[in-house]
Image (tube, rainbow, N blue to C red; front, side, top):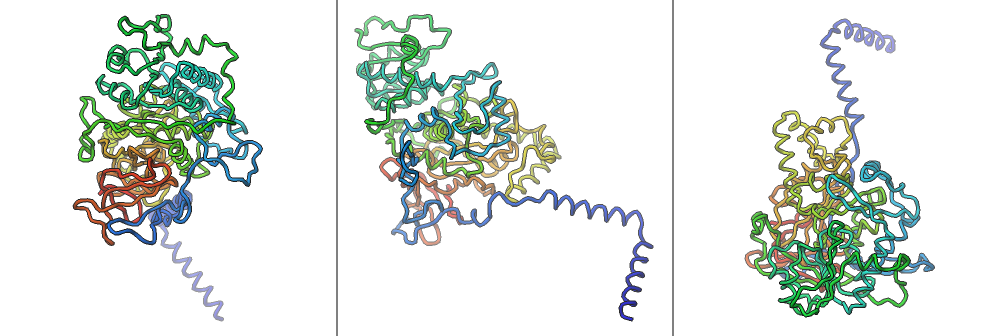
Length: 608
């Protein structure tokens, strides 16, 4: 009887529902089903668990008076050593044995041998497409032993490949030539180029000190001062940018000069020494040294056995300059006013920073042969240099452009190529953002989409896909980065402490993630730190208030803390003071950055 009453009420309810059904009911149900369907089909899990972002670094259990706790990456907990190197295992060594820390020579050996089978990186569809756009015949996808390529971009005109074997030959012939002439301290005064990399590796293989001089100095006296302070006896440079007469007269210790001439000037006699120099400088050209040697010479790298540890690498830390020569005003309060600081990095500093950058990229996203890497910042900056070495070690293809560091924005820097990974200057990033933001403001629909995708990033923790249907509505306002926009997947930017670099906010970084569809890594660098002191976590898309974006957590090669200085007192409740960095990637194992920082609630580092 109860069952009959229930069925009667059910029948009466259904009859009443459909008896009152009309067009409005149909519309409401359709909208409800559409909303539920859209939510279920577009819902995605965050790229990482939110709790991993809530505490990105691990503080020491105790702290010293006037200092904050010491913070480390969660991948390098307290009580364990920080990452000292590459853990290189030579052929024939047991896989259970501890590997060597390695040095720069191991980077080029990896380039020559290719990617080992047990380290094959996953393919990235966007990366593979971008590499294919760079040249007519792209490298095959991640086969064991696959080698990356080294390319040179000449803007929109052409992209030229230099074979790995040819670069190896240049490394050997140039290194042996400098040694035969008695060179030991080699100043490299070149833009980003194949010759720059070959010179660096030649110094490493032939046990010479490499000195990286910031290119295109406007003041000859500054250039002479850097040569004198570094005690260089050899200079590798290009005609038209090096004041030969002035340097020889002001710096008599110079013994050897190697010109890197282009094809249009190769017919000139560059070996002639000007009158009055007394023949004290041995002048030669890169092309003559390489072309005059037998074709079979220099094909094999020097054997590993019996070689000593490479010598130090000397760099000059200089303020960032605007076009009128003044230090950028965005962070002028922290800019140094003295001469360029000369810093000597050991081989251990460099490989520790290199290993940390390799480890900072998740396994599913790490660099590989399908990537095309562009350093759109000067290789004389250790942050850019370390990332370039990491790309080479990962057997990614590297494209070099001599004018990219001076490009006003990312569109100009990537003209003629389609990179998947870019290291850019803060100025170029801000210029690209400013131009794109103006386009967005002119479109109300684009502004709404930007806000929606920003919430997807910051709250949902998901990077918007450039190929998604909704994202395609922003295509008209996106920056034209490379020949195939949307293929960029990783963008590195760095704040150079005390160098006066422009301020980059979290809002700018978030907008760039939406505009480009790429992950943006923002780092803090210092004069005595190889690579980065701290950088944004790979999957951290949050937006924080402030002029400067937070710098993230330390890498596995560094640890940081803040120390009381002046009006900034470190207390239990307020962790603000001078930033101190420690670790094997730091010159002398510890360095004060000379700027004030604070430890945020998520244990990441930021400016106050």
